[in-house]
Length: 92
Image 1 (cartoon, rainbow, N blue to C red):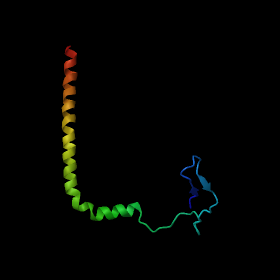
Image 2 (cartoon, rainbow, N blue to C red):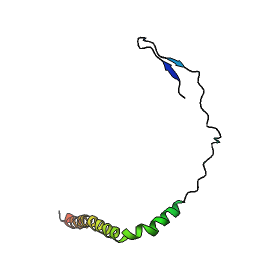
Image 3 (tube, one colour):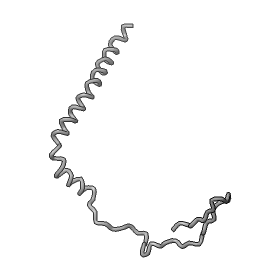
Image 4 (tube, rainbow, N blue to C red):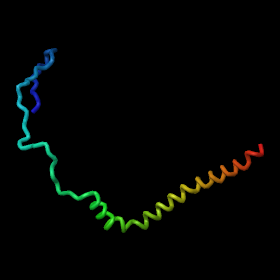
């Protein structure tokens, strides 16, 4: 429970704060971890890959291959130009 403030709108002083309050207690709280029966990360990922991922695997693999091919085109072009540059430089 927060302290109660008593204010006067016409006064130019700080508000009076009533510090005589009692904090609420949490009863039987011991500070230990709560024991919940939850699945491990391994079980969650196994369930996901058993059911969901099989449906979308081929489409995801095709999109991934297209992205990789799109990224490799400029890399191959720049490597080709660098080889050409290295061959031309000794002539200057």
